[in-house]
Length: 373
Ligand SMILES: Cc1cc2nc3c(=O)[nH]c(=O)nc-3n(C[C@H](O)[C@H](O)[C@H](O)COP(=O)(O)OP(=O)(O)OC[C@H]3O[C@@H](n4cnc5c(N)ncnc54)[C@H](O)[C@@H]3O)c2cc1C
Image (cartoon, rainbow, N blue to C red):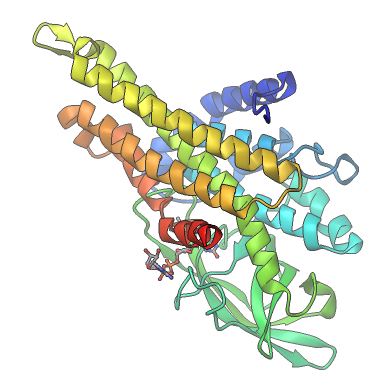
């Protein structure tokens, strides 16, 4: 049987990130939720600490680690601020895309700057016409001379307003193709910021590609292989999504436990009431189940094993559990849980948004059902 227990090195990494998150990320979490804007300087500091290049090989400026360490990073970041953790996901998706599909030249050009956090990345697939059906987008790459003109608009894109590097999909004729290009290519315009209910520090914008001049060398992988790029990267990213949901759930459970330890009713603390204790016991059990599914998916990713089914299960379970635990934590906090600005209500909003972001619960079930039949 596979052993998913963390190695000493992984425990050390978790401790280091937890400490950084407690000291640097947690203090501004409520403020970033109130006034959403991407905490660029904080993210760059994470880069300087080595947290943004965990999966990048050592010779390209990274730590040469894997998906399990990526999961630890986003889980620990999300325990302090889920919105900040969301900024990290597309950054890693782009690194993963370049590592998996990029030419040696593309890897040398982009990975050192991404690993150090000097450059931030966005991964742009969704359009206003729909996100679940990834093939139903309209952005086109029209051949002009030796290169292309990228025309279209993407919606709900993390990091779009600050990205130095983009991966975006467009159609060359009818062939879905991924492109990798710098954020200063002419014609890129961050559009409207969407006022989301949750994950607000990871502000999402629409982005317009207005005849952006791209070259053949900006193609990532091969012409017509865009779907494979997207699905592979999403599979990796969903382990991050599950980890963010787990981080939210851990934080909500911790808040509920702290509340139950001190709040009194009928002359006892809530933690002494059997029904509250049972509720908390159930929350903890569900959280552990979600964590095990996530650990299995991350481990499979690191074995280079096919893992779409296990990843979908991990994302579905973690996101459902996070919303459920956040709701129950709010219930345990009574009226205080319903206070605007309390961490209880923030956890609920963050958790709900992750039942959509990174692929909806239904999209996960479609993948799981496909494996059943
Ligand atoms: C906080 C946040 C951050 C995001 N960041 C990014 C980003 O950085 N880059 C990016 O490209 N996108 C991003 N997205 C977009 C996200 O990927 C999409 O919202 C998601 O894929 C769902 O697409 P949609 O919103 O268009 O819903 P739709 O696809 O329109 O779906 C609407 C509803 O119908 C259900 N549904 C759809 N198809 C089926 C089906 N076949 N069977 C059953 N039910 C179905 C869905 O599950 C959903 O409940 C982000 C979204 C959020 C909320």
